[in-house]
Length: 103
Image (cartoon, rainbow, N blue to C red; front, side, top):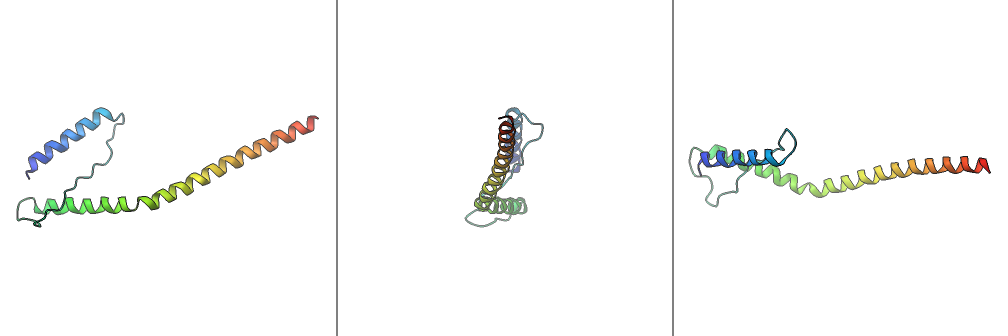
């Protein structure tokens, strides 16, 4: 309920992530809030809470898109494997033709 608590938790999260992630840059951290049952109460944080809820909605939309992304990844993986198989078959055919010329 207090922005100070949120800032301390966010800072602690960033610090801990920087200690366990070997990269220089941290991954995006999506700050969000759960919708309150009584709606927004008038407070100094009401506009911030609406931003957090908007971010939550965006994350939920991205999660719902995951099956489509998985299908796209499977198709891409199939394409890559097919290209690799074609390369191996060309190498194999060239090796067989060279070997047959020697006999």
